[in-house]
Figure 1: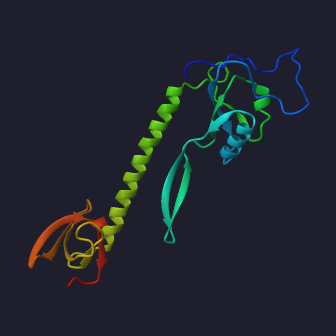
Figure 2: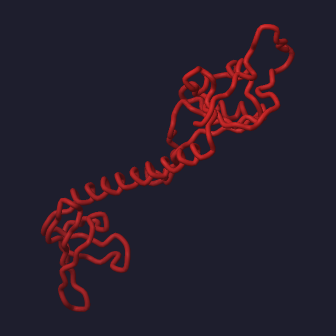
Length: 208
């Protein structure tokens, strides 16, 4: 965040404020990004409201595909709840913006002026979001491995879930805490010991 909004657009003594129709949200000047603070769960509402007034806004979300009752659904999770990043085509008119529904203020610098957000800061935000998404994916994969491993039993039977051996039966020989599993199966008329992952197997009562 390089610099602060210099105060243009704020109400001062002697200013004339129109009461007919909605007040403009910006005055002529350079386009800049700002981080608006908004009420909880109202980020999308503020985005739509800004769009109607000529201001582009967004709040970063993480989108996930979840399975519920056998159906795949898209689930959106707010990455920075309570913030909407808005690109004003000119100097923001602070008093007008503060009257917008659910807008509480903006991110400021030490002197209280609104902080201008650099484009590279926004790119860094997206990079952080991608890192968090990878961490969540890794955690979900680890949870799936633990769940699959709990269903397996040494000496019990299992089926390969997918891949070139999908549907092939095997006998579980050993289960490691890391999720690695050693199984015995018959291929081409001979028995083989194979290492695989717990999430690649489906537990069954007995292997043939």
